[in-house]
Each structure stands twice: as C-alpha cells, then as structure tokens.
Amino acid sequence: MSHRTYNIAMVSDFFFPQPGGVESHIYQLATKLVDRGHKIIIVTHAYEDRKGIRYLTNGIKVYHVPFAVIYRSATFPTVFSFFPLFRNIMIREQIEIVHGHASLSSLCHEALLHARTMGLRTVFTDHSLYGFADAASILTNKLLKFTLSDVDHIICVSHTCKENTVLRAALDPLMVSVIPNAVVSENFRPLNYPAEPPAPGAAFKQTPPAHQLGSNDPITIVVISRLFYNKGIDLLTASIPRILENHPNTRFVIAGSGPKAIDLEQMIEQNVLQDKVEMLGPVRHDQVRDIMVCGHIYLHPSLTEAFGTVIVEAASCGLYVVCTAVGGIPEVLPGHMTVFANPEEESIVTAMGKAIAALRANKVRTERFHDQVKAMYSWDNIAKRTERVYRGITGDISESEFYGYDERNAAEWSATRGRSGVRSFALIDRLKRYYGCGVWAGKLFCLCVVIDYLIFLFCEWWWPRDRIDIAADWPRKQLQSDDEDEKA
Image 1 (cartoon, rainbow, N blue to C red):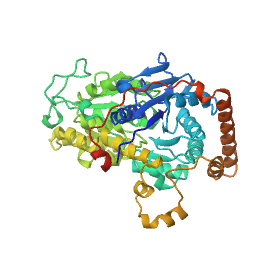
Image 2 (spheres, rainbow, N blue to C red):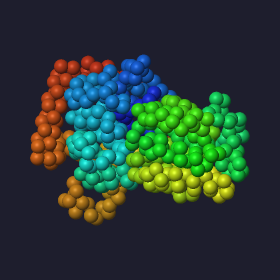
Image 3 (cartoon, rainbow, N blue to C red):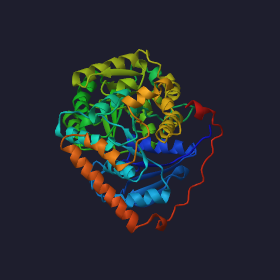
Image 4 (cartoon, helix red, strand yellow):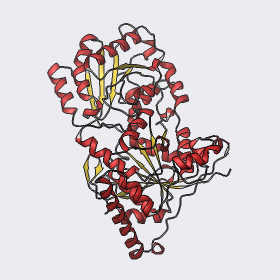
C-alpha cells in the first residue's frame, strides 16, 4: 500500500509560546507528522508580539489570528465571526483534515463546526477531565456534545479520559481512540547521562543522584506546574511545612505561575522557609529538564489529570515520582517509579515520607528510569497511531480494519451502527445528528448549523475560491520505508 499524505490543520487556543502539556503535544505531534510527509499548519490566537504568520522547525506554519483572550489563554467565543477567516486559511492551504485540541478552546470548537460545513474531515483530541455536577462542567459538556455530534473521530490521552469523554458527550465508544502523550526522551536525560556538568544557573547545587544518596545527604523535591486550584496547589501549600518538619534535610524547588502563587509565598513567609523553599516563577519548557535534574523526587499533587506528561518527563530525568492517584495518572508510569497518594494532605505527607525513606535506603533504582521511559513513550509511535486515525476517517483503510470487526458481520454492523468513521456531509444528515442533542438544545444546535451553512454559501458567492491565492508548500519529507507504516 502506498503511503498517502494529508494536509492537516491543528487548531487550538493553546500553543507556544505559552508552556503546557497541550501546547507541547500539538508541536511534537505536528513535527513527527511532518517527518512522515504530511503538511501541517497550526491555527491559534495572537500572543502579544506573535501575530500573523510564523514558521517553526520543519516548516510548520502557524497562523496567529487576532481574537481577544478572555481567560487562561482561551479566546472569546464568537461562533460565526471566525468562519470567513478560517475558510480563507483552509482554502489557501488546501486543508483536508482539521484536528482540534482541548475542550476549553473556543477556536477548536468553532473550527470543527466550520470544517464540517466546508466538507472537511475532522478529528478532536481531548486532553482533560471534567465533572458532571457544577455549572461550568454542565455547560462545557453540553458544548462538547454539540461539537462532537458531527466529528469523524475522537482521540483521548488515557483510558480514564476516554470514559469521561464518552459519558460527557454521549458518544459511541468505538468512535473514540486512546493515544497517549509522549516525551522526547533525549531532551529529558538524567544528569551525567552521558557525563555532563550540572546546568549553569541551577536552582540548587546538585547533590548525589537518588540511587547514591547517603543518610545525611539533602533531598531536593521538585514541583513544576501551573499554580491553579485544579493542580492541587492548596494541598501543596498545606503539605510543605509538614514535610519539612518531618524531614528537615529536604528542600523544595517550585516552578510555575498562576493565581495560587500568592498562597505559596504567604506560606513561606509565615513559616520562615525561605532557605528551604525556592520559587522560580514561570519557566520555559526548554528549562524544565535543567530544573528537574537538580532534584531527587518530583511531587505532583493534582486534583484532576487526564494524563500528566510532566511526571513522564520527571521519571525520564531520573526522579522518583510522588503523585495523586486521580484521573489517568495511574495509567502513566509503572509502580516502581511512583508512590501514589490520595488527594488529601495527610496522604501526601505519608507518601512523601515513604519516598524519602526508599531513597535513603537505596531501594529505588532511579538510574534505570530514563531507558525504561524511552522504551515506553515515543512521539514516532504516537504519530503513526494518529495517522491511522486519519486514514480511517478518510476511508483509506477499510471500516473493518479501522474498527477491528469481522467482514462477515458487516451487514449486522451497518444495521446497528452505521458508518461511524466516514460521516455524511449532507446538511439533512448533519441536522439529524444535532437534533438528538436535547429537547431545546437540539433545536438551537440545528439553528446554529443552518446559519453557519448560510454564511458559507455567502462567502462562496462573495469571495469565490478562484480569487484566493494558494500558498506554496514547504518541501515535503519522504519516508525511507513504508514497512512500519503498514504495521501502524
């Protein structure tokens, strides 16, 4: 089978220069897909001095569209005003597949709606977990149900995330694949792997590696996180004084920014811990490894997490991980690399005590973690699995191969499920899917789709496609062999 390539647009409010897991995921996935011969563009909002079009490594083109940011880098939802600009970009770049990321990204939801109206294939990747009871979650889930009613396929970063998304958006589980995050293990090497001097400007002078700690050597605990409530910063603030009281020969390095930073600073002042806790503030992603290798334990007290890429990065750097057993975190690393705690102050203090005791007794072989993580997580593998989704939704592989059912059951399958992978673009079929989203919501969703379609027809008349210049493509890379592609 020949290796077909696609023109793909990744759309999300969350992208570089803002640091974060979603941002890193989009960039790394895009880079590996370019290596496999695909054309990738990224559509996000403007970031301060980053406006218009930028080019990144491998010729990835980034469109920074001028929309107002309202909260945590998410743009103000406009529903329809993005459509003319979005249509222009899709036609200029000859896009075939639109891949949206993140449930709270307004640009993502709007792009998926407009893409279906334009007759483009769509994929959505969910990176987060949300509840069902509070007002914000109810509204988010209703919006997600609207968007995903007409998306060709959904990707989740963990099995827990898949269960959460299927319930929130009332999806057929067969339309949802689990493809985890990964790390570039070469960028997260332990100190002296291979032999190298400590990074200049490190937060603390490096003490012996975790597997060589003596009974009196100080232990450094690293925390790198956005300082928000859902990241468990309240638990961290309450736990640090108790951990330092129980284990005087320890110290903390905390990197990140957010509204909870003031709580940590007040805790440090009240307990006079300036010589034990250092807050580094916001850091770039390329600085994360230099901070991590100065420590021995990584503490991740999150209250909810779909995957937790940072704990994989920490393990790759040779740190012993203490984390809360919430969301998809228990799926990420094997038990010998982690100590799990409940999302409670007492449990975190106890888990940290176990981790420190294990390191003091040299019971944990952290020097082996890097090679083990390297074998478990690879962006090349993630790109191949994502490419298989693209091939499934475009019909380039058979339905039976994509969904894994026997051809002999094809008639029964079609009678009960229909063609989930390749959905009809016909307006009446789309309206049927949206109408089932609720007694009142279904009617509102149908109205939005009809208005979107009328705007599309107007744009086709007012600004014909033949008047839109086609952008020149960056030279595409060629795969050396299609053998791995066939096995993906």
